[in-house]
Length: 483
Image (cartoon, rainbow, N blue to C red; front, side, top):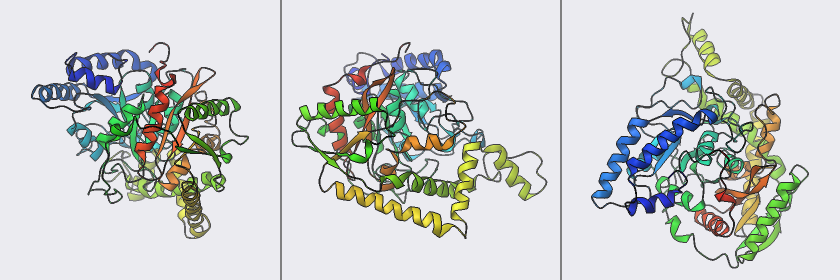
């Protein structure tokens, strides 16, 4: 059962080959047995899962149907879940039980999805390795000595290890696509505003976006169908009709114009990954796609711009965690200032503190124009580059990451080296574009991903291209040894 994709589970449930309750019990037992190796879950929700599974089986018995009805999933631990710990991977929120469900959680529950638990993550989604979590690092199931990517590494590791078929995740600068690449999954970051952020604990509000992690593009289409849509509770949610993402999966790629930016193939890219990307391009050409070299001239400025904007928004968003209303509070504070200082100093880890300090500095009176305002201007230039490119091509293709997953602890003493691993992913967040990573091969036994970017609200096109590619390759079917 654990080897089935989300689509296969939906067909099995519809054909009454097994029940949701049976499947849920199998996966919960598998998580208990195997997750101690991975540390991919922060909380398991066995009682809730079995309750939801029984309810889903009852709904099917009454004639209801749906791809997500009875399907087991997990949520990244920054989506608020009523009455269940929502920690954001931080000591600051270790004792926080959300009083309501995030919109994404509520929508998937209404569709009949079964929540198995909450997955581990970099603290407050800050990181590219899932090593900054207060609950310990997550291990990559392909090699337990390597990172799974971050910040959605718990969701990625759990799905890759076949502990469950799909999970929710979030992407602020690549935190869905990079873990997908590192663990041989398909991960989709939707257009900014496509998926509600209400109840999703904020890191950088203008960059954060929820999306799915699964093994196939077909499964991501099913997940996105349940997650997407306008939400009046979220002021950044866009009132745009949600298409049937599964309906367009089998469209022909004949004549599809694919742009390949020359800036992607610089000295920083592992030549073995570059070769795998070229192999992916050849596969898509066989399916009728037309390849064209393009340029994204301002890509070189994206990382410095991102690492001004994101910490600036983080310093503002995280100011609410002060020890007064909820979250960690220090013991016996002498006065209000002592309460603030010690609660935040004890509750936040080093990476979060680092980004808060950088952000506060960038927003300070003497430096706002020099740093934050200039970064926002670069952001506009990055977006303009994409708009120009999409006048010539339908999608953009390139590597998801410059290197395969690194060893645990390898970049801990040099945070900037880890930041540079986001070079191909952060531009989509700065511009608000949809992006997808899909499996493209292996380097030294570690998975590698190819990234696709599309114009706004063209998630269906990304899923179509990825699905057609996966019908003609088998990278996505590979399973890590021991799982």
